[in-house]
Length: 236
Image (cartoon, rainbow, N blue to C red):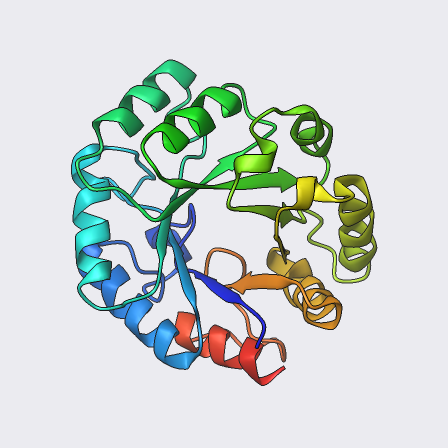
């Protein structure tokens, strides 16, 4: 069975509709439904009280505790630079987390990626190396001394055009090459989400789906939640 991670909310907010879970309780409920639908891993963006992505120790702990009370699969969080632009502050936040995720994504093209990854590894947190198309992430990852130690590579296709996303995904996979022998999870976003997911399934790669990546089902209907998106992916 192909590994399917659910990405519950991403950087989306209230403006994307009530279906997007933001609070710890809503995220826990969404995670439970997605796992019941077939997800084997959870990726979540903890939110501040005003609904913005945050690496705050309090918010991260509250989110992890709530989700883990409902599911028994690994749970990971983002460390995206938009949640804390200063690399040193990002590292300080991670070092202050009282509750640790099973893994955390680190976007390899962002300033401070190596320091952030090192801080996570030092605390025993698995690192998902986010390598985005359209960036120098693949080249940076290839040269990184930390690359062989990551949990997996997130090959993230930022091309949102349905007609070209698959080609962009193939180019990204070629740029990654052997990926230092680490497992690769391939996914797209918005209009490219389903074409890239289908490519991942045909290629036998891990993949992900959820409201972070798309609000719509393969037939173009708006999804009622993460569980519906996961069920559609599993059905494929």
